[in-house]
Image (cartoon, rainbow, N blue to C red; front, side, top):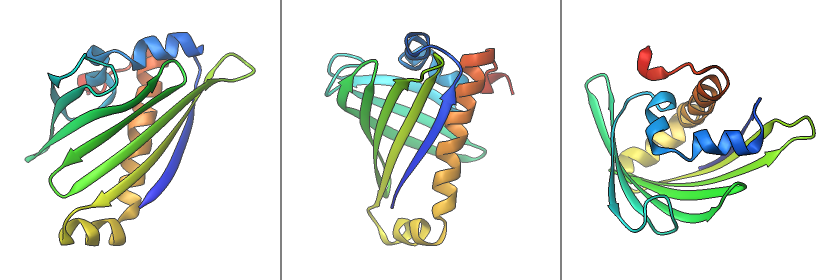
Length: 151
């Protein structure tokens, strides 16, 4: 399953990237994030791996992020692996003519088992909704300092 999400953040690209490219800020816009632990490689650079732990109510999820392409401030791509799903994320950033930042996120979810194949087929909107929610939460954090960690 592939889809693209876009959002305009009312910040210059450099300021956007200072907030986006900071592991300490992730908890402010990724609701449910419990911890982020560096595993290998140079943190934040091509090939680096990080373990991300999330908790959504009683459900826990562990993701392994691998940075597959990094050309800051315009591109950041990574894969995310968890039980049953391989997720490919390509993020593109560009400054708009009015000095804001356009964030385009291309997502591909590859189900690795029958249950996840059924989920991506029956509920594709849930994946798209979650991606858009993270982008909107980042926008609120970047523009207004509103953290999902405080909610």
